[in-house]
Amino acid sequence: MGRPRILVTGASGQLGFELARLLPAVGDVVVADRERLDLADPDAIVAAVRGARPHLIVNAAAYTAVDRAETEGDLAMAVNGTAPGIFAEEAKRQGAVLIHYSTDYVFDGARRTPYDEEAPTAPLNTYGASKLAGERAIAAAGRDALVFRTSWVYGLRGANFLLTMRRLAAEREELRVVADQIGVPNWCRALAEATVRVAAPGCAALAERAGLYHLSSTGEASWHEFACAIVGDVPRPRIVPITTAEYPTPARRPAYGVLATAKFERTFGFALPPWRDALARCLASPAEPPPAAS
Ligand SMILES: NC(=O)c1ccc[n+]([C@@H]2O[C@H](COP(=O)([O-])OP(=O)(O)OC[C@H]3O[C@@H](n4cnc5c(N)ncnc54)[C@H](OP(=O)(O)O)[C@@H]3O)[C@@H](O)[C@H]2O)c1
Image 1: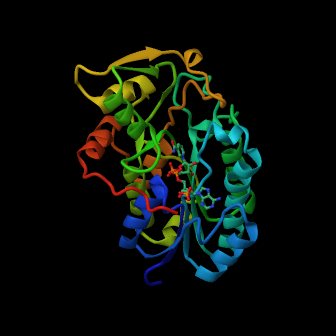
Image 2: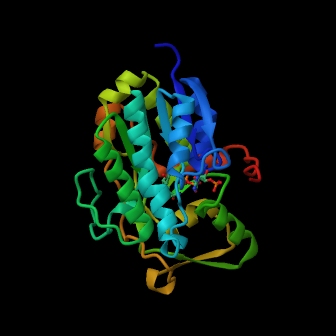
């Protein structure tokens, strides 16, 4: 087979933007952004996949508003729970491979040691439940899909913790940041680079490695430690550690979400960088243009 045709969703998002930029190294990319394809519309997904006839589908689109999902559960479930299964069914029908992303929020965070792929899931919030439903819908389709669970995605564009901390650091004398939730920050570009590396050998090799993987930088941090690393060693602002109880949110979050990445490393032969190294690379990279207005 020549260069694969790759359908990428979510190209205005953090990860999808990087994928749309990097995947042309391994194939011909067709972008299906929200204007062209609403993932809440099952018929539109079927039409988009049949129209594009991809060899590889990379679904980076998701409903990611964790707190809003508590009041928009149907929409979150349509985009995160139902749509991935339709992609998987259509991929099967066309002999294509699907790459999809999920989250550490499928776990309840009661552990204090990293979660592997076999660990029991028990989402605490609607977003996590919708993403777990997506994983299950893909598994039910039963073929040639790779699901990469990741955590705490950030970058220099879009809406994320890094940009929020930078903005608040410029505005305030003091930041109060949760210190009792532990996870791993992941730069969206490092995730996209890993996806490209995984896809490079071609769709047949990908299909042989179908399955569920934890894809994450190594190490761990609290949101407070992540904030300190983002803001850097400057006298202002003071970054004060607080508890989750002091920062109530509509959605409950797991207290611990570190993902064990041994299966990914064994299967694909490489690891993502430690989170502090990825953050340093991100902070040293040129500023990104803002997302195009939709
Ligand atoms: N962000 C995190 O901290 C995090 C953590 C763990 C796992 N993940 C997973 O990683 C993947 C990538 O996340 P991300 O951080 O890159 O997300 P993101 O920046 O929020 O981007 C989400 C993308 O999905 C699109 N989208 C949302 N609803 C849609 C719909 N109904 N139809 C079509 N497109 C729609 C958005 O389009 P618009 O720009 O038009 O809204 C955007 O392009 C997702 O699977 C997510 O669940 C993320």
